[in-house]
Length: 209
Ligand code: FES
Image 1: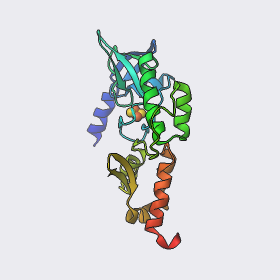
Image 2: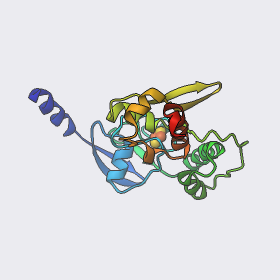
Image 3: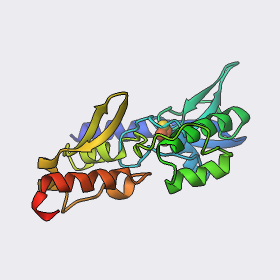
Image 4: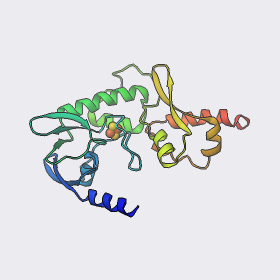
């Protein structure tokens, strides 16, 4: 109700000062490091993040170095909350090394995904470092979470395929909900979602194929 809204409004007013890449940044309590950085015009790469969805922290590409009183560690900036006095470094040897190896792993799954190829060039990631196991799904969960959180449906979900988790549409639900929606399609950082949907269509509407 109104009281709840007021409380939330008050909470948002608590100012937090932190440093990102040497720049003093003003944020408010409850924001993530990623939001504070973007608000200050500092870009951090992301794969599984979406503004309309709850933070997930799945891909780790948004890793940054966080330092406080005598400690420093690598954190996922899309889920880590801002804290007073925190010092964030968005590019460092450690950060870049972590992003490079993550990209090499994802490229083994989706070697031609444009977002991955572009980031790989930026971080010097070797697309041939790992044996190619093209599943095309990098498990960012964007489609699954968008369907559940924004569309309030569960047409697409994670399934276990042996050692690999990947996404799959439920044909009966897809037949009912997907044709008029497809809002998750542009969110997929690889081509997997569309391939999975084509398969689903073949299963759900066999007469058309
Ligand atoms: Fe932060 Fe994926 S964008 S973990």
